[in-house]
Length: 92
Image 1 (spheres, rainbow, N blue to C red):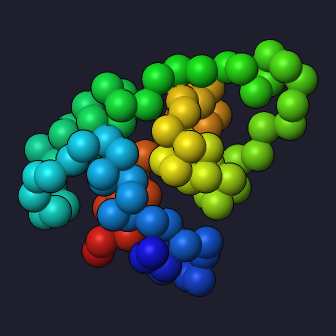
Image 2 (tube, rainbow, N blue to C red):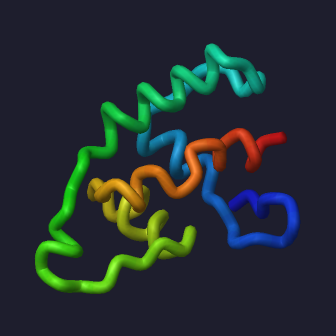
Image 3 (cartoon, one colour):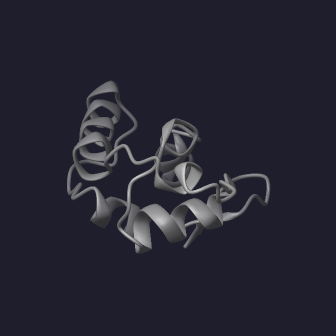
């Protein structure tokens, strides 16, 4: 796992990239950002089952990775958009 700057929670960059099936460049460019966004949208569906069933929605990085990366589930708006730049922050 990659620990992002400032001692924040670990972000498992390799697992995330595998989840969204991204094998492209790791250069920090607009092209890369577009490809990461496309991969995320295509691999991670909108899903609102957690709030629908009245379960609390955890927005911490560890919970989101457990659900959306390791659990291969989708997420609803707050989960999907927590931090779209996290991959860039993890590899720069």
